[in-house]
Amino acid sequence: MDETVAEFIKRTILKIPLNELTTILKAWDFLSENQLQTVNFRQRKESVVQHLIHLCEEKRASLNDAALLDIIYTQFHQHQKVWDVFQMSKGPGEDVDLFDMKQFKNSFKKILQRALKNVTVSFRETEENAVWIRIAWGTQYTKPNQYKPTYVVYYSQTPYAFKSSSTLRRNTPLLGQALTVASKHHQIVKMDLRSRYLDSLKAIVFKQYNQTFETHNSATPLQERSLGLDINMDSRITHENIVEKERVQRITQETFGDYPQPQLEFAQYKLETKFKSDLNGSILAEREEPLRCLIKFSSPHLLEALKSLAPAGIADAPLSPLLTCIPNKRKNYFKIRDK
Image 1 (tube, rainbow, N blue to C red):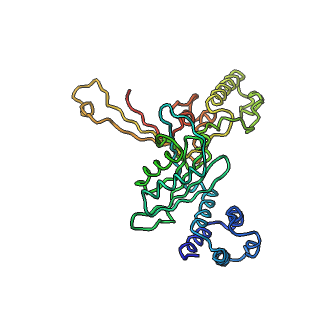
Image 2: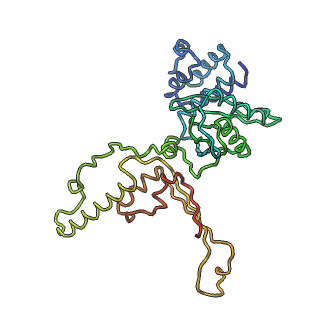
Image 3: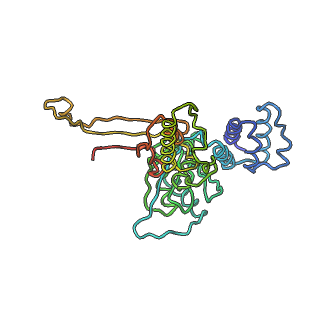
């Protein structure tokens, strides 16, 4: 086994938490069950790593084997990446072709290797007709950097691909070309949608989020739920509060549905508008450039946070469509300009 491959595997194993190590190694399926049973996973991690590297050397692990281990680790820790969504489209009059995974892989790899002398491409197929692609980029004069790869998740026979954000933006057009040609599409565009949560992005673009989950007993009438009202309060005020709470509850459910929301961490709005004034001679009125403003809403779970605003009394119901349209518009980057 090459020294660079051994170092690559070593670094990957060191990243894996000990409580996940056995699970990930079994998913890798490179070392046999008998080989794994020879490893004492209760000893210090450095000793565990050395033993595992020795076993990999015995089996002569290749660079592709090491890359597959890295893909599996990334699948377990998807949230450590920020994912962008790309949408492809067919040309006018083009029909949907039957998808051949082997043909897709060969075509994708050939396009990259023709354009770049030094690039390594690895694939791992998963459930739901998805293929994970790992690309380690080099240049005409340098070998591929295995420690700064790009990951792409493509769902076959769909127009969507998810790419991990990378500092190597110069390679994005080439990657887009490889995806469109290999998947037999005509063009590709980057959507205004980004998150650390790949499953939530998938749910939004495939519109799989609007299914009913039993998150609470919605059949219970609101009057029967505890509203936290003072029992000595005037009955007219009590009735008015119940009516208002019912209205807010109904609007919130109509807007967000009665199911968990996809997990996004932010929504960003860029506003561009011309200054309007009836006063002549105003400095701002003579300004040709529009006024620009950027507003960003952040939360560990933004859509659930927005859903809770009106019931909590923090905002009026209904909320602005600019906040509630995120899943339907399939975007969390917005540009607002004058009509």
